[in-house]
Image (tube, rainbow, N blue to C red; front, side, top):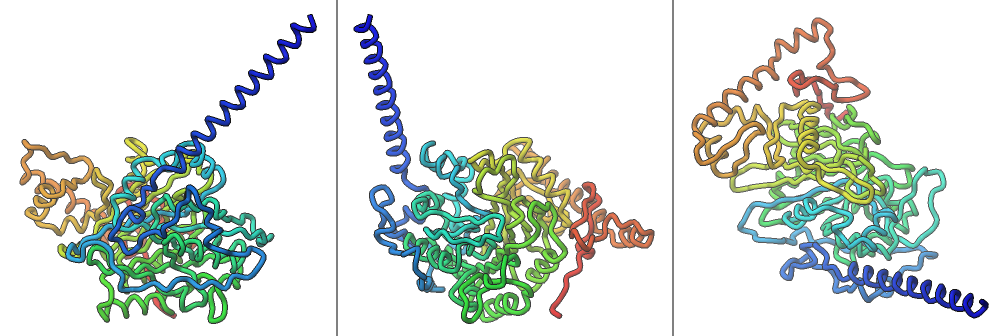
Length: 506
């Protein structure tokens, strides 16, 4: 009996050992599979791109052996100076596409999913990966710092940091430029901000919106993409403490209170002196989890567009806010998150702005999605259409989406001739939702129909007399609310652009 019990014990030990060995084997296989995935970044793969990554092997090397930072000592590192004349792509093309994403923080659960789940495709679906690969340049807001430092501001509810060990996950996203003017880049101090610059500089990812002093923090990132000279500005109106603001003798972020004090004059100067073709302003602003922009956001955006910005885009609320066209140019008040912890059922958006200097036009594409546990997924079918409908309903502009997600102003389309719309139908197949075209379609009839419908909706949406009558009769449904910004209205009963008054410099 004792001999039998001994055999049982030995058998159990062998089984436990085999289970343990198999588990270790599976873990090693998964780890090896993940770390040998080639990053999807164009920048990493391009051999003729001046923005190549440093020759660093994340699989077999420790970045701390190359970026030597003592977390217990001050860091006096200064960002690498960027050459504003640097260029990527074909200078003769004069067309470029820039992808812009929202708040990015790779929480531990996202890193675990990437490491043990199979790499990039486990934290981001193919729609977004393809959008990154097919764009010429990719910008995102880095809502954290990269550091080994442990001292943080205990008065803050949330302090976020990324370990240098997780840099390979951040690098695999293919971001070319991180916006750093936000309310988390100094969560672990000004030295942690310098750590962030140092690590990102080493792997060839640029930053904007922070600097060793105010002059450097305010400086836009300038780049020529396929012959299109672009300046990207980044600022925040959200800072936890005054010492986060960059000043003459203080490292920090570009804090924006009045855009007329530097931002607008600099945009005007760059354009008047023919140094840039397009200006993008990426702002960290608004109220968290608020679906509508504040009056301050609206006024700042209108002033920026009026004075020369070609796109104003925002982040910080962690959910998307509405889209507006002002003086023919787009404003995307908030993108929401991109990759940010457990984004359970939180909507988000990534945008693609396309500049065409030859045709003299710009096109905006919206890619709506959601954070589902540890993965950022693009919406499809009904969910995608629901997001488009929501943008249409909340926008103060009369906008329409086509099947690919491009957004247009109806009144702008109404000014096009039948021939111009025919060209649009034939060359780009960009049709407003509800129209279809095939080999048997009569393009002339479709174009005329679109012109009539758009003209009719345009007249209805922008009937000043009708709107004035409502105001006179104290019907405030279309009037801006001082504390909320854009009012909520039913589709077809949206406010006119003139209801949103911009505020000039004091």
